[in-house]
Image 1 (cartoon, helix red, strand yellow):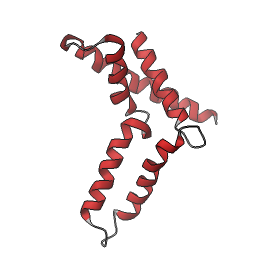
Image 2: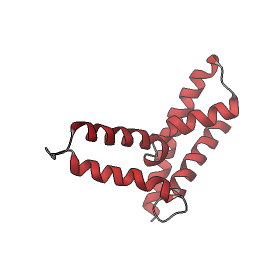
Image 3: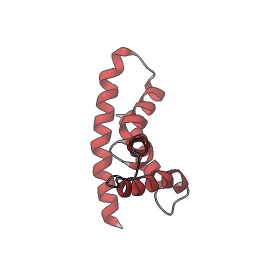
Length: 117
């Protein structure tokens, strides 16, 4: 339970400090710019297919690190779980449970937080 709470608090805190107007927004900004450019270039026949694929890979990489609060539980949840509990094959079910539970709970809390603004 402690690991779950630590995961949720870390992910929510990370999401807040990388939000627009916050201290670490410079980390999130290139990924957001990439999303905007990707939306424009997807339908453009003059843009190389490989350029679009490269931009989609950047987007895919950015989601669990800074963009998507739900996706953050996968990378950050596993990292925090391993830091707090160590790694052993018999802990893998607990690691998966921690990531799924954190994903649902932090998304719910984030949506409540966004409604406050």
